[in-house]
Length: 164
Length: 164
DNA sequence: TAAATAGTTGACTAATTCGCTAGGTTAAGT
DNA sequence: ACTTAACCTAGCGAATTAGTCAACTATTTA
Image 1 (cartoon, chains in turn green, blue, cyan, brown):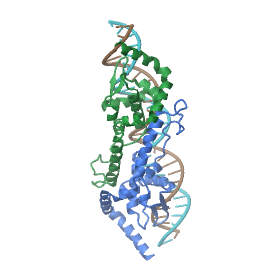
Image 2 (cartoon, chains in turn blue, green, brown, yellow; image 1 turned 90 degrees about the vertical axis):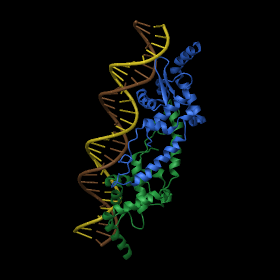
Image 3 (cartoon, rainbow over the protein chains, first blue to last red; image 1 turned 180 degrees about the vertical axis):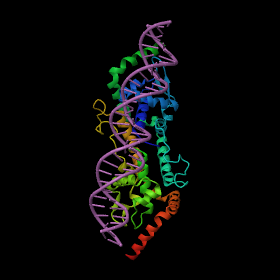
Image 4 (cartoon, rainbow over the protein chains, first blue to last red; image 1 turned 45 degrees about the horizontal axis):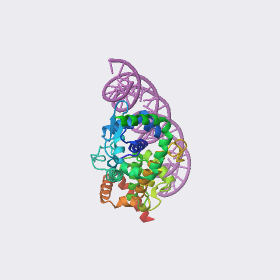
């Protein structure tokens, strides 16, 4: 388990998706606008997230991304693991023969510690993060900020849905 | 809080130091030999650890490094923070004005999550890690492995201490 | 059916970090 | 003096980060 900015971007974007994901899919352009993340970089991250089965891409006009599961069933550890290709952090690929063909201290210690962190992050779901009131407030304000850009599109989609 | 191999090296080295730190200081050469980490890289890591006040360097023959505090008073989060220069992970340096001069989602979410991870790692001390029996076993075997290299030096030092 | 939208893919790039090497200087012990 | 070992600095190749650009494919609407 590594913790880098890449993982942070992914978690932030997924939370944004969880917040705005209603019946209508959310486009990466919307997320990029709200979270000020490069669109192309988001595309790379979501390609991995999609392959991990956490999100579903819907093509064509009115398309975008949706969570594949409920927010409460997606945890932070999974998101980070999806975008961070885990390089074998032990020189021997987990075989335990890094030092004189035997297990090294790193193995016993760090692997265990890494597992603990993973377990910890696995206990935190997107749903949990949504609960936090502070997140809700910021999200609400961000919607307002981006309203001028997104509003028309959104309104258009909603109208279309109502007519369907 | 970031988690990279750099931090892992630092934690591993500090644990090695904690295990072997008796009355006699431990040289970086010893640690480098036991943990198969580059000596010069270790020097860089320990420069930071020393500046953070976690270890004390003793120069000259018979010198080496010692823990500045007891193992139970040094936690994993501090070690990682010491070697990982924390790049301001919010674009605005924690001022909370990254997006339209207001706090962004990243702030509310990731900073909070990062704090949780930090708090968690702060609860794990070197002393706690020493308790783990598996660590003890590996350390014992590693001592045996490195015995041919280190034994003479160690014996020499002990003799010197007894005579003092 | 044509046009517009939007996801998908891949190649490419500048900047940074990682892990390490090489070479020194300084302080302390014998 | 000589050795030891901490301490310091510069630099290097590889990897990663964060991002751009461009082409392509699928879907929907007109």
